Length: 496
Image 1 (cartoon, rainbow, N blue to C red):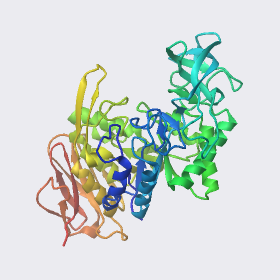
Image 2: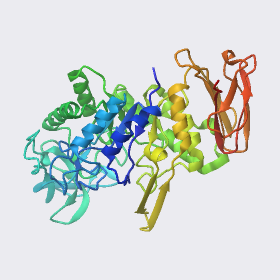
Image 3: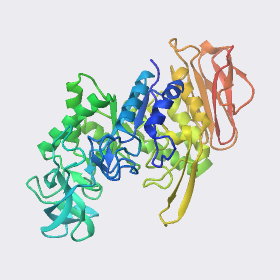
Image 4: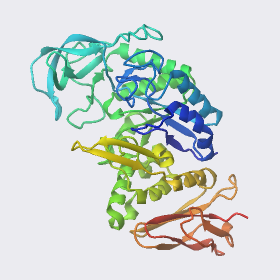
């Protein structure tokens, strides 16, 4: 079996001349070549601003770029047919497609409704700050451009627990909708701000059975229409986990398979929330290891002051590696985004070595590290900023090495604050497999490491080309491996 590797095939500012779905199809063979087995694609359905929105301000789940709605037929990424063609191209190359699913909210309602609400304290959503009063809100979704094709379900205020805009008052607040489903918000995994059910736009209320039934039906429709193989679930800590369980179990039972699912439960403070989510959902989903990403970010900021012996401490990949999806950065942490915490360029090859070449976790590559990313936006101060995210060639090299060589027993050598490493002994299934990784966040490093007696007398070279020369494994399976200052070397068998 080949090691699994995911790629997030987009970033927040994707702006290339070629639309994204066309690029996916064109790059599918290349992704296979570099060892990718799964491609996470961005939200494919119509958003509130069809042609420009990244996809998370979801309007119509059934419009994959087919209907003239919200200013365009196509989504930002292309037409429905191009999306399906992209998935087919991935499948032709043995790559699974992961659809990005936004179940927390809807945006861009078609009609106003008069609804009863109460305001809540934004810092404590359990605390009401008004009596019941009436506002006009965009809570009715009729999808006039689609005219009932695929589904005739109409969303109204009974489908939502809260909104953030009163059209008649022209005021922003967190308005708790008062209806027969309950006057407060649902119980969700996150207790931040008292109750973090409400995040943005029209918050979907899963106490309404009609909503659950509609989304289960949509799940069937999207699987049968697009042939996706799994899902990335957005913002799960804001969503009733009972619904997530019911929705996933429904699809797995319906199609007699276990879809690959990875959930975004963003937390950079402690691991407890993610472990609780795993317990609540009985391990039904993988989880993005945001704490490991945060450790990478801190290490890249602190240079040699960061103790590399602690890089995996209290991370999901350390505590529950079977359910960890590891990553260096994503669309939320990239420069100028809401959770900006971009890992410095000097440290990125080291971080990728730690997610690609170790036994634990399923790594996720980030689009700009393979293809680059150039864009402009404003910072928090309102200043124009130009961003140029450079391609990291070592990432492609290490992704290929992961697919072909990163197998077998793993021996740890995390015994120095700046210089750490590990070895993989290889296995019989993958020819010439086995490797040794050494990295330093300080001065030039070296370390005696054991790789296994079967390599006795064999010659190794640095596949990244950072170190010249060769080394030979001794009769006991050990050698002194080297790396440059602030760098990483990946030692592999020299070809014949």
